[in-house]
Every structure is written in C-alpha cells, then in structure tokens.
Length: 143
Image (cartoon, rainbow, N blue to C red; front, side, top):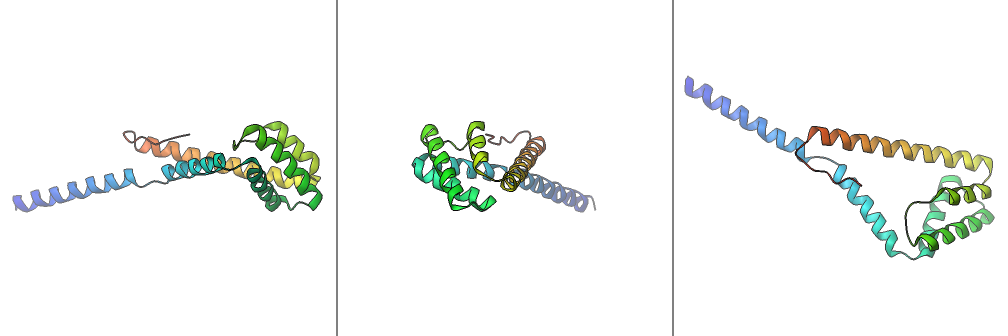
C-alpha cells in the first residue's frame, strides 16, 4: 500500500512539473517582438519611394483618399522617408501636414484608428508584463 501511494505521489509531482514547464514556454510575446523586428528590418531595406508608397496605401485603406489627396500625402511621406531613411515612426510635424490634406471626416477616422492602435499596443505591453510576472526566471526580449 505504501509503495502504491509513493508511486502515485511521484507521478502527480512529475505531471505537475511537466505542466509548469509548458506554461512557461508557451507565449506569444516573443513572436510579437520578432514580427516587429522583421517589419523594421524590411523597412530599412526599402528605398524611400517604396516606404512612401506603402504608407500612402495604408492611409488610403484607412480613410479612402481622393486622387489629389493621395498625391499630396505621397509627397509628404516621400519627403519624410527621405529624411528618416526608413524609420517607422512618423513625427508630429508630418502628421500635421497629413491632416491639412484630409477632410474633417477623414481626420476623425484617422484619429479613431490611431486610438485603436494605441490601445492595442497598450494591451500587448500589459500582456508582456503579465507574462514576465508569471515567469520571473524567463527573459523576454522587449523593445
């Protein structure tokens, strides 16, 4: 009887340890960081015209630009990409230039999309912080 209880205790302890290891290794936080690094790396390899084209297309998808607006926005993005040489972050002056081209409705749509993006990033950061609290011995790359 003692041997049976002892064997059962060892099996339960082994399963608990295996479960704890799986819990530490399964996460999406490192993938998110890796994806961001790949995007930043691909933008560094692109020339300013390609970056401006890509950013113009993203804005056009978000707020449906007219042909005239698209040309003006592309020029602004091209100027910014030339100055920044592929950095992913747009500065405040560029955003203000873009807003002068857009209509009031388009500005509201852009601000709503921006707010949604910021909230999504905050949620990802909180998730990463929670993961780091759960796994203090495990290091997670944070950018």
